[in-house]
Amino acid sequence: MDKGILLQRVSFAYHKNIAVLSDINYVIAKGDFVGISGINGSGKSTFTYLLNGIIPHQIAGILDGRILVDGRDTQTAKTADIATKVGLVFQNPDLTLFNLTVEEEIAFGLTNLKYPDIGRRVKEALKMVAIKGFEKKDPQSLSVGEKQKVSLAAVLAMDTDYIILDEPTAMLDYKSSVELYKILRELNRRKKTIIVVEHDTDFLWKFSRQIMILDQGRIKTTGNTKEILSKFDLLDSLGIKRPNINF
Ligand SMILES: Nc1ncnc2c1ncn2[C@@H]1O[C@H](COP(=O)(O)OP(=O)(O)OP(=O)(O)O)[C@@H](O)[C@H]1O
Ligand SMILES: [Mg+2]
Image 1 (cartoon, protein in one colour):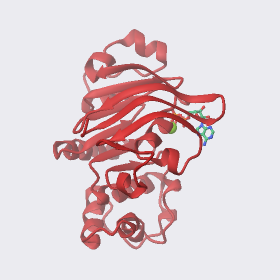
Image 2: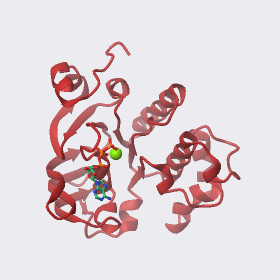
Image 3: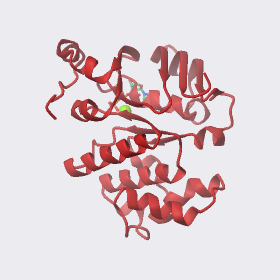
């Protein structure tokens, strides 16, 4: 498979004998909009690290199986190759914000990877997340929600084909959350593949096409969003919120 992300028999442990993800077989089709859910500690964030090569390149552990991004094995491909294809907005934005100004923060990855038109990209990305005028601010001085928007802008500026967001609405107010999902829908219409870790099944019901639910490091169920999220008994048993299907 040349296009898409393919995970074959993937298992991962941060420490020996403590499997965090087990026997993950999964395909993310290019152009899809995928929601990932599951209770705290089920392995969602760890799963996102597999998709952009952070595991194994930056985070140590025991990794088995194969992860292919557009046919390239993340374990052997250059980190920069994967970084230009897969962008990740972390659950905790403090992990990625270390520059002196918002502008430098967003330009950082672009400069490292020698992108053209950096000034224009930074400007457009800030406009998309509606924090224009923040250019000269110190990222550390921002609220958590604003920091998250800066992290998202940094990923948007890279214009990657795959965009992963780990619980992007956890710290956002309702209005910002809806705006974010509208941005994601628009990006998806422009052929970007969106993968979002989300507890709020209302947003998944409305915006995602496919869904995957993790439970203790294993894929519990996966398929069409409306089909899966209509199984209220299953959601109840997994500790996942029933969606408001009129949303
Ligand atoms: N750096 C690490 N070193 C060791 N164990 C870790 C590390 N990061 C996560 N874990 C463990 O891996 C398991 C899965 O964690 P992960 O962060 O992937 O879950 P999650 O589904 O994203 O949870 P949450 O909903 O709270 O964000 C947890 O048991 C956690 O304690
Ligand atoms: Mg997490």
